[in-house]
Image 1: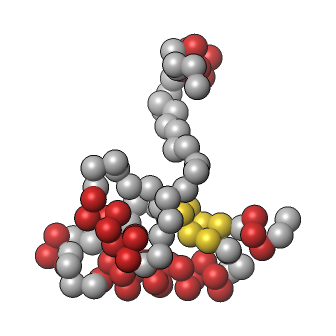
Image 2: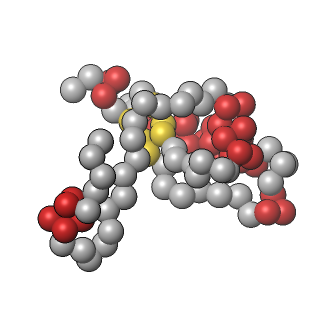
Length: 90
């Protein structure tokens, strides 16, 4: 495993409405990236909803790039076989 293989996927992190547009989101993002780098991670990843343009604009400002990765969800408590059979072909 190389340093390029290591990364961090951020859990849901959001600023309260009264702190938005104050720079706190950029500061929080920088702190997360610094912490990840101090542990040897080569990158930090995050997920936003397709319509969450304000968050996407923040990530663009801090150097984020759109990923080629596909984000999947698996329903909790369901039989995996029934979930798979109900999925459309990719």
